[in-house]
Every structure is written in structure tokens, then in C-alpha cells.
Length: 421
Ligand SMILES: Cc1ncc(COP(=O)(O)O)c(C=O)c1O
Ligand SMILES: N[C@@H](CCCC[NH3+])C(=O)O
Image 1 (spheres, rainbow, N blue to C red):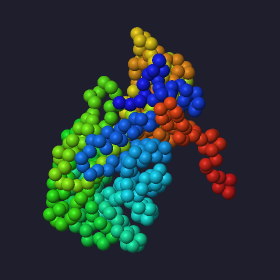
Image 2 (image 1 turned 90 degrees about the vertical axis):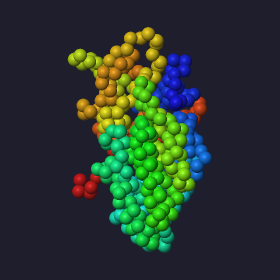
Image 3 (image 1 turned 60 degrees about the vertical axis):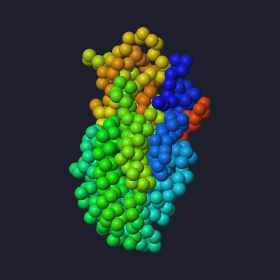
Image 4 (image 1 turned 135 degrees about the vertical axis):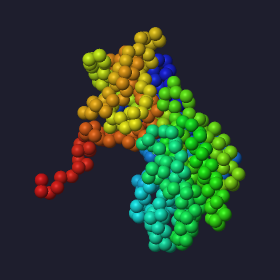
């Protein structure tokens, strides 16, 4: 459920007509709903009710400071994967002891920054990284709390580019080597081993791969405890998928996911951490764009939009499907027409949808890409020298621009000219 609905014939973001935002900020732009963000965060929090737990929002999904602040104020922890994300989380008011640091290539500087600023734990991805964290901790005269990310060799049954839990993926250490790696970690005086981490992929639409991975984590917990490690925290990653289309079978709900976690891991008495990103932000955001031209091609009509692959890369990158709906509610009974929906960028890959049935649209009409809140604005670029598009946050009947569109001069003057030119 989200808060982008038609009312009186017009698409609204909560209580604000989307066309009103378009008139203020210009198209294209992203708009997020505070109510959806909070609702989705709370669904996870409630799903783990009765356990000692922390929901650490995977801020890579959408990391605008206003979004982070909204979630932080509701009690969210954060999962970060870079110094930039760590600093964003701190700037949004998240205390260090609610920030977990994931990622396969943390640099010495990043480790130093997080360890001196305060960190809940590092999710360690390799033995060389473990050595570096140990060295930095000793240099700073402290100990670093860590989990080791294990790769359970489970097929997440998602798009290959976003599956992370198979042995051929770069993530984590093979679960078969875990006991050896934990023994190594325990021998390093700068580390405090506190738990296990696992994350098998993104946009999972079935609980079975999660269950399989968590069963392996449960077995490993017992084995590591027998080896004398005080395993007291399990970080179970993110990955629960969202419905990108209403015709699809809906993915499992957070409450079902939470129930499964309790069934598989509840008996261990560990603190549970999860790192959802997409499910918190995905359906909390839309991208709004305007039709520039309708072009009649051979055997097909193109809707040429002012939004492009640089603004929303998911269709080009993963063949991802996004519902695209008109901002003016279509009159019932209007015969839909097939369109290829494309952006102005000079690549044929700049195609959002092929032969998509839409109500007839003309130049100047606004359309909204649903489910664009996660991995939307954060993956955008200025390719073709198209300035990054604005982001807007709605709260009830109020809206605020939370990222301005840079001016062309700002974009151009970010570059510097060497003195010999
Ligand atoms: C370590 C880690 N945690 C959490 C997430 C968030 O995943 P999702 O947005 O699918 O919930 C990711 C991305 O897949 C990740 O790599
Ligand atoms: N960027 C991907 C998700 C990546 C998940 C990152 N761990 C997407 O848009 O679906």
C-alpha cells in the first residue's frame, strides 16, 4: 500500500496534487511520501515484535537527508556501505551505535572514520579486511565490534545483477570456511566478534531462499558457540521484494518474513538485525515526467518523455518493469494504445517500456513512474549533461523540495580548467 492515489481525477501524493508539485519544481522530479516511508519501516519493526531487534534501513536505496531524518526520527538504524553514507547517517542524527557498516571493500580511511565516530558493528567481508579493521582499532586504542558476512551459496532467484548469496558472487566468505575465519578473527586483539551477517540478494519474491540461508546461519551459530565464540547478534540483511506490478503475485509481507525469522532463529536468543532498503523506500516514491513529443514511428508510436535513463536507470540496467500512469486519471472506457516509452538520451537503451498499453497521451501530459523510490534518484547521473532532477518530500498537505535541481552554471562550473588551457 502506498500514498499515491487518484482523487477527484488527479494523482495525489498524500494530500498534494502531483500536478501542483510539477508546476512548482518543473519536470522531471522524484516525490516521496512520508506516510509510506514510515508505514513500511514500521511494518518491519512490528514484524519483529517480541524479539530484541533493530531495523537498519539500507540507505543505499534512497539516501536524501530528509528521508534519513524521517526514518531516524522513527527509531531506524542505518546500514551504510561507504564513508559518504556513514556521514549522511550521522548528519541525519543517527547515533553511531545504530549504524552498521557493510560492503565488500571498506578502505582504511572509511574504517578509521567509522571507528572514531562510533559504530554498531562492521560486517566483515574478507580476511584481509579483518586484518585492516584490527590494525585500525589497535591504532585508535579501541576494539571494533564485528560480524562476518557469510556466503551461504543459496540461489536467491532474483535478477543475476542483484543476487549476492551464490558462491560465485564477490560477497562474504564461503560458509564452509566460517569456523576457520572466526578462529582467525578471535585471535586478533583489536576485534570483538559479536555475531554473524548474511545477505543473499535483492528483490526476493519468495521466502524459501531466505529460509534456507537462515537455517544455515542457525547451524553456524551453534557450531561457533561450540567453538567458544559469543554469538549474540544476527544481521540478516535486506532483500525482501516489492510488487512492481499489480498483476504480479504479491511478494511475501514483512509480517510473514518476520514470522519465518522467529521460526528459524528465535530459539537462539540472539539480537536480530535486518537491513531492508527497497521495501521501505520503493513504493514510497514516484518519478514524474512530462511527454515532450508523441512520435509516430513505423508500426509503433513513441512517447518521448523529458525523463531519461540517467534519471531512472532500472529499466535500462535490469530490464526492470515500472508501472507508468498518467497524472490525470484516465476517463473510464478510453481505449488504451500501445506506446514505446522512451527518454531523450542518445542510446536505444534509453527505453522505459515497449508496447506499453496506455490511455492516449499528448505533448505536455504528465506521467508517473510508480515504485521509483528505491534505487531511483540515488542511481541517477548527469549523462548527456542533464542536471540531476529535484527530489520532493510530501507530508500530509505540505511538500518541500529536499534536493534542488542544480542550475546549468552550477553543473558546468563543477569542472575545473587546468592552468595550461
Ligand atoms: C548488505 C546489504 N544489505 C541490505 C541491502 C538492501 O537490500 P534491499 O534493498 O533489497 O532490501 C543490500 C542490497 O541488496 C545489501 O547489499
Ligand atoms: N540497484 C538494484 C538493487 C541493488 C541492491 C544493492 N545491494 C536495483 O535497482 O534493483
